[in-house]
Image 1: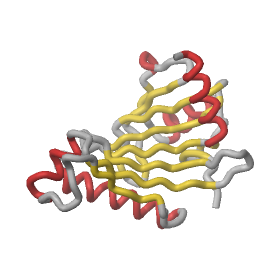
Image 2: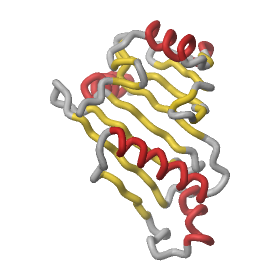
Image 3: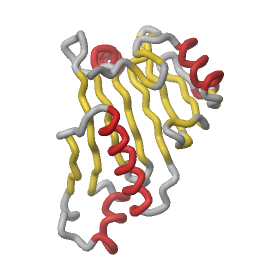
Image 4: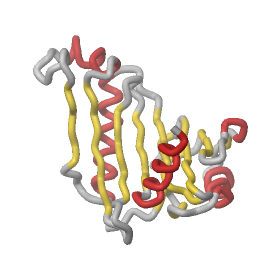
Length: 177
């Protein structure tokens, strides 16, 4: 099984291809004033019948290397977990069930804490992290990835990454630091 891109946009696509797919075909909104040389921002388009609240498309040498999308509709831990688990199941059904699925607890949060009274607060403080990732072999040494996470504000974030191009992107950013 391969991961070649995001929606109908192959990894390595240029910015014009991304704009055409998201604005014209998906009716998304492009926030040009927030764009940088290596990032483009969009919102208000749909994936799997869910409205994307915000997204960032990352580029290295005008080639798409990573996409990060966020769904923000969760006002409590129960809704956030429901959406997280639904998306995880949908990705698993489309590709495969990941062995890389975890809930990480950082003290003073523990797995046996009372869920109703402690869990949401611990997630919001960053003491509990939900994450799952799927890796896909590629023609390069680096795998491609889908990474699903619940953020501390209870939003759900999905990243689609081209291992080779994203590695180049990260190295270019490290050189800036």
